[in-house]
Amino acid sequence: QVQLVESGGGLVQAGDSLILNCTTSGLTFSSYVMGWFRQTPGKEREFVAAISRYGGSTRYADSVKARFTISRYNAKNTVYLQMNSLKPEDTAVYYCASKNSAVVHTTTSEYPYWGQGTQVTVSS
Image (tube, rainbow, N blue to C red; front, side):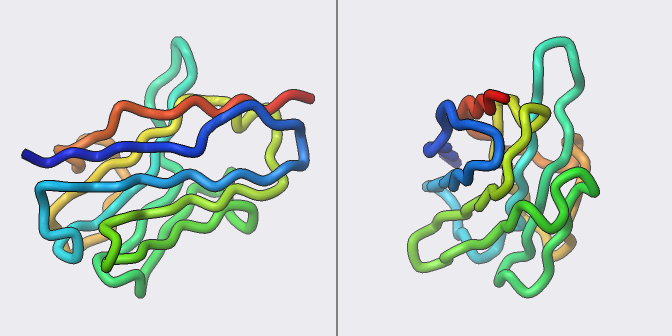
């Protein structure tokens, strides 16, 4: 079955950088659009970034544009989220998601497969 496993979260200070990894199995990775989302308690899960099957197209939420970079390495079935200049408001559980699609989707409802999430906490 399809499995997504996030790693790389942790506690950092404002202004620091962090890289999240999402390793997948059970799918033909290069056929899947990959996305990163985040959620804080009491709020809806929100879009962060997404990348096309071969990495040629990316989309970002306005709140992370120019600070976060999504990338993928198809040979390792892994997608990454490089997060720079972190802010306390970036604190959330970060989830990766996948969809067999040629379209880069930005809504949670479009993605059928999800990881368990990794906590990112940014202290001020």
